[in-house]
Length: 178
Image (cartoon, rainbow, N blue to C red):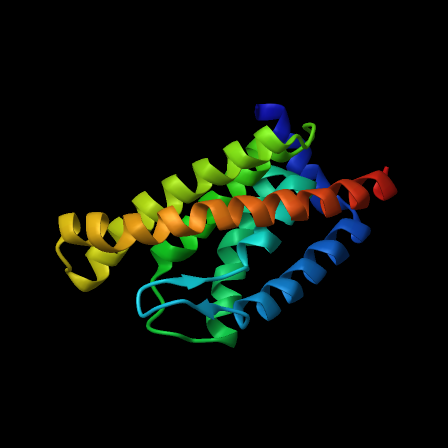
């Protein structure tokens, strides 16, 4: 696993890679604006797709850095609510997860779904629930069981389908790069 981080750092030495990463940052900014509001407490967003691409293509280090600065950039472009740095850390963990599980590995459906479930449970369900509690003071028990868990039960399968579909595109891109 240490080699994945070393290789990921080396990815930043290529001008071509830096250009692709910048392109994905632009894609992220566009995806931030494409949120589907299902109800007052449930929205479906797509910016995680950019983090998935970057983590899978450039590794855990680049995915984590991209996640942190992408979240900051997304807030600057579309400032909804107040900026809370721990949410950026949460997206940093997303990039790390995508990088560790998908970088330089075969893109099988099982691996992609496992990656997405780990990411959604760890960051969306656990970390972000704690961060919302810290920021708003809402009762953690009620927040988890009656807001966050139902929302993520809906979102996890949707995100898995999106990531599997996007993975097919990643495979095509990676084949062209190699």
